[in-house]
Length: 180
Image (cartoon, rainbow, N blue to C red):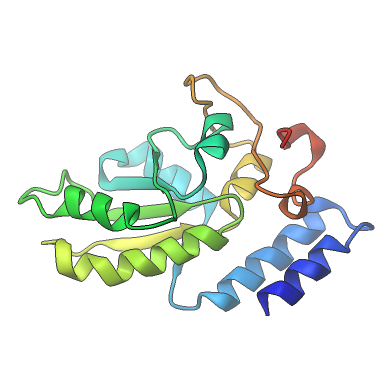
């Protein structure tokens, strides 16, 4: 199913990125029905009102993270046991630093949906309090195209997103697309 969908996206040349993004969001939500999504507007509100309750996890590569990421995000590799180790370190302590929500994101939401599933499986073993795990609907692509705040690895504001692959680059207007 994933391979077929990606081939379809790869062959789309006559649509605007804004027409393709909703198709990808729908596809990801269909693939991961057990993963809760959070909209970009809601997340921005949470970030402004109660940032101490959020643990924001960037599930991309270091090269992607260097181009742009959400302020306060922690880079976590989707490979191996990095996510499991981070969650253990964060939540096995008696006081889990006030976090109530774990936010996962990647370029479009596919890798972060996998991470959210993994987190939902790990948390009952390591957390002493109830936590909600979310995937950002539309990923960093949607966040960026709505001109929401992102920073580079140097901490300066940026509007560029590393698109991960030429296929996902089709979801970004050129003004938001970093070179890969």
